[in-house]
Image (cartoon, rainbow, N blue to C red; front, side):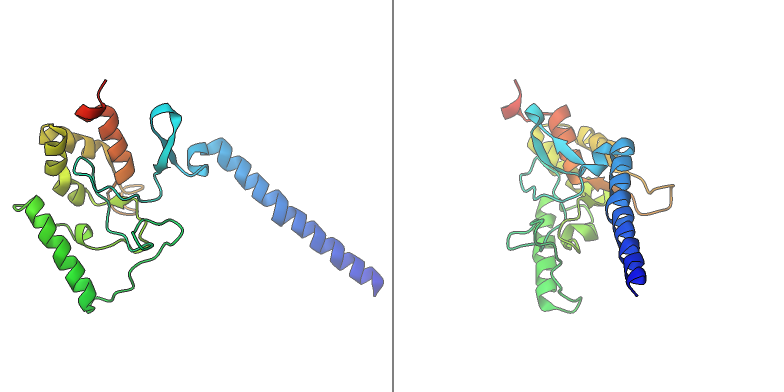
Length: 196
C-alpha cells in the first residue's frame, strides 16, 4: 500500500512539474521569441514611449477628430476592462430600441446622406471590441477630416491602410482597429494644437 501511495505521489508531482510549470514556461518562452508584441498584450506607445493602450481592448474616443469605437456597456461609463459585459438587452427590449434610435438620430446629424452601419448603433458584445467595420470607419471619415482640417481622401487613405482583411482571405471579416487608426492619424496628421 505504501509503495503504491509513493508511486501515486511521485506521478502527481511529476505531472505538476511537467504540465503546471514546464509546459507554461515553454509556451511563454516560445511566444516571447516568436510573437513578442502580441505576447505582451499588443501595447501601443505614444510620445516618450508611454503606453497609450492595447490594440486588443477598446477605449472610448469621443472627440470629433478621432475614429469612435462601438458603444460599450462594460462598467458604468463603458470601456471598463475590469467589467467586461454586454447590455443583456434582447432584440425586443424597449431600452435597446430607444438606445439604437437615439444613437441613429445623433449619427444622422453628423452625416445625413450616408447609410448608418449596424455596428455604429449597437454595442459590442463584450463592451471592449477594439475593431469596427470598414463601413463604420468610412461613415466617420468626413467628421474626422473636418475636425483635422484635412481632405476627406486623406482620412479615407489612413482608414484603408488600417483596414485588416480576413485571415487567409476567408476567416473573419474585414475590420479597422480604432486605436491603431487613431494613433496613425495623430502620427501622420497631428492636430494644429499639437504641431511643433
